[in-house]
Length: 215
Image (tube, rainbow, N blue to C red; front, side, top):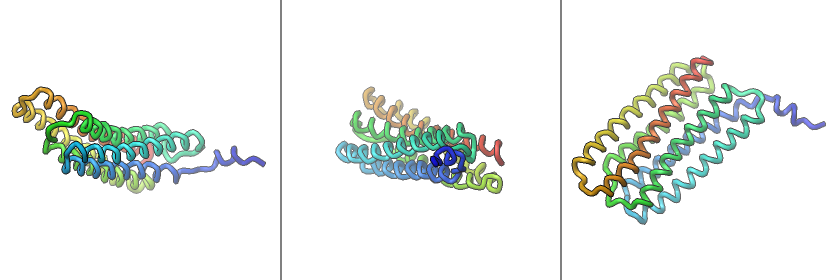
């Protein structure tokens, strides 16, 4: 007898949290590469780091696709499948923005990278750590709602810090840089890093939505 239909009825809640956590781990690993790229910046090393970051971006895409496929064949999910899908998309967005940043560094070949780029990279890494902890708390959301909510708040605070770093960078950039092309290069590179923290904050918002529904 073909049990494929019965398999679809079998709860597979345990699959989604590890998959989401793996995406958070990729964010952390990518942020480490991003920080190294910024610290050791020259054009040749940037090409090498971009290749490594691109590979992480592909890993993130595969995981996102796996989550989507699992949602289509799993009858019972731990949370609304829309929320799980949104989490996967936003987590992947964080990786995508870092990949876009690394790509722009290679394409634009700026004279130098702003010191504040490393600050944003570190804030993305902080976000990855926070996201990983928050996702772990989702395994027992009814008992750990307060902790998950606190991590969501921390993601909001990290994004606020990133906003301040980016705004101060822009102010300093227009005050100190006279080359219009270099201004454009630096601004677009930094913009992608700042958008990564925006996507990380959105992960926190989705987690808060899950808390409201299930805690």
